[in-house]
Image (tube, rainbow, N blue to C red; front, side, top):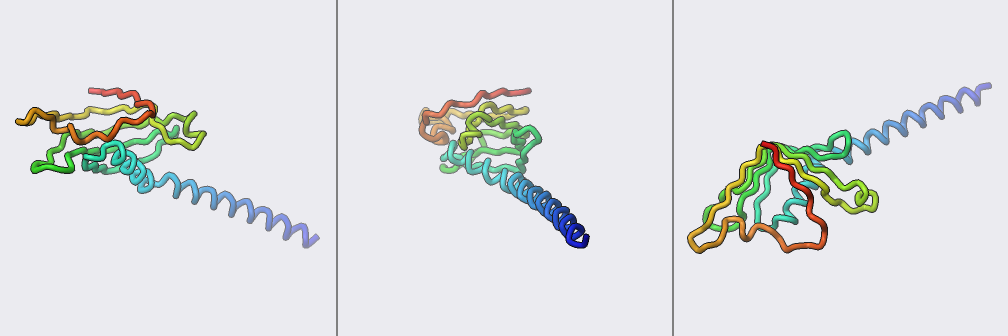
Length: 146
């Protein structure tokens, strides 16, 4: 009878340890610091000529990423003026491509963004050197609110 008691205790301990390990791994995978680092890497790759700063980013319950206080400014030049300020945004992933291991953005909702596009004296725009080369991946849908 004693071996049954130890078997049940071992089984219960194993289940509790497994649940705690799964929770810890989920927490580490979805931590705000990791999400922020991923978003900054993604934006820096798509805007190589821009200085990107972000206050916070977090993964929401249904899989979208919530961003707060996103600033985009010119990386080079005499005046590194800010050309985009976005107080809050939501990034929606394409879940079909996420299952294949590809991170693709399906939709971006911008809440009260402010853009500042300036025509310079030489005829170019202040954002002309910000965007990277065009890729073959589909572009996301942008929804601007207010």
